[in-house]
Length: 201
Image (cartoon, rainbow, N blue to C red; front, side, top):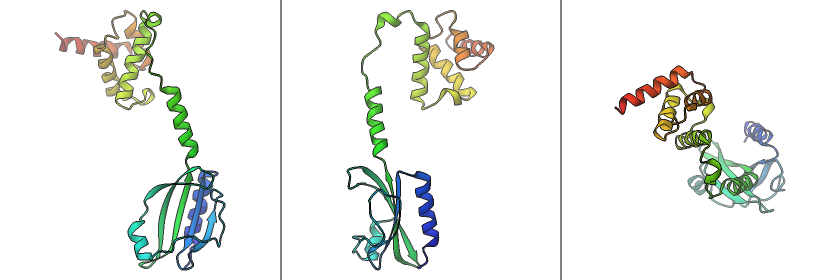
């Protein structure tokens, strides 16, 4: 069976994600590795595949399912196995492996940095109206999974409404400040506020 196109794809995958990726093609008939690119597992061409199973059973149980496994050195690997067919029969199996241990460590580090449960000391922020604006805006963005730099005009209007509801406009200079933060004109802010106040009349 000609595996050239699969080998080119495997090499491209490893090149794109180097040094975190490895691609292995297993020959079903010989139950051995016939191609490998990348160096996660330290295996080589000719090593046994340990896939001594009926190809029909293999097809039933493995159909491009992403699964985790642990490398020989303890690193967490995320893998996907893709059957390579000649007609209706599986002749080879391409396994794409990705070292995700670094990302796992980054997640743990991020949780450690961001996981503080302490509230702000009230004495430092009780008069800081800008901080209250920031907190109100952050809550809106976080709740709606938005980023401030990509807000639409409608979303900006909704943000103004949320901040108005939370009392962010009590300070005289708040409207100007929020207009600057949201990249809106003062006229737009006051139009939104006028609409909100008319609704509450």
